[in-house]
Length: 537
Image 1 (cartoon, helix red, strand yellow):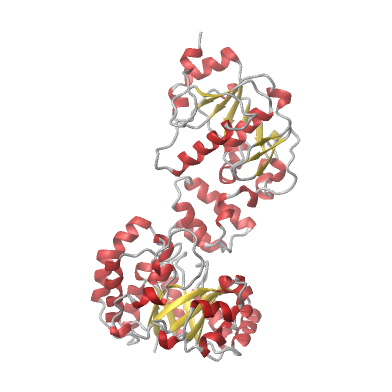
Image 2 (tube, rainbow, N blue to C red):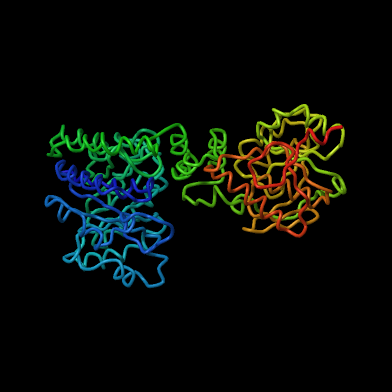
């Protein structure tokens, strides 16, 4: 008989920080009881406490004991432990587990699964002995198995045979597998592994249900699912669809109605709010073997538009993105490498001149004639950020670009623009540099240190990789007289970009070497402002 494990509250928690309402949980547990699932994996078990997360991120025995778990689900509650946390603990495996778990007879939990990357599997295996000795059913979820060949799979399976593991799962971590891939993987495991097999599918390419059914046909007897597919990135195989298929072949006996009711009243509103489910970005990520959390993070961040997301996907396809690291998206230190110093000194051109930095706000277009008149009359050194083209191209002296995502999105366009491009060229990834080879590059170096500004002759140190910070540094290192800003209208107060940019302006103005700032078009930022019209004769 197939064992259906529903892990909605565990995997779905990646969208709402494991903070589910009491009403949803009560209705969910009752629906799982009615459906007749074999196990409910209710959350994680962890000691990591960074940022607010709801109770299902920790799933302590005390927390679980307070839940109204139906009698039909008693002895069917599972939790998951991340193998990476297990291995990082200074306590050692047994002491670490002893901190997290009591004997199973004194716990609402009966099943513990350890999720680990292939590279970590062997070092995590001794945990099975402790868990089994303390009365738990033991599962291991092997992640990113799609990258393994038959030799590696059989080697891992042979290692697993020496430990008391009740079920050995493999996860289609990137959602990149096809039913044919599933068949080959299952057969590789079956050639050596003597225990039960399980599968955890992701729906990047729309294959989660097909892959789960193919695995069952090949002899896999444990299958994960989540209600409406709620789970990290594009989500998982949907419990409702898998349940229908299992009922059609008499592999599941139970009542679907309560499940359909919680979908209507609880999960469809959540899905509308958070937006899980596959789309072309997840499909591409699956095709390229990129961790779906990169896509989830970008889709949930207003700073990334469609062009940005596609550019990041293409970059990760070159640079690698199998293991998710938020810093890969956010921090330039994971983008820039090599010598910090550039070969261009801005002071050679800018010294004792006023600088006008052009942002992309609509006020540039709205006040174009006045801005152009100001440039013609006063001859400031004009720095346009990125690729914006809202004034006469002949009035722009140079363009500045350094933010990783914008560079990835715009590098092809920069190659076709007439102005020189100021960018930390030597520190860029090879795929970006190759796109810019035909451009006139002014190489001004850049390093990132939180809460720091430093202005050197041919490089700068910035608190982040925002291009406005880079342009301010170019003007300051260039020993300009003053800095004027146009097109820095500002985002709404609830947009994360508003605070991020305001913080840059505030930190810059606190530096002893900072220059006088003035926005000559309307701005919401907390910086001095004046009117471009008052400057005209």
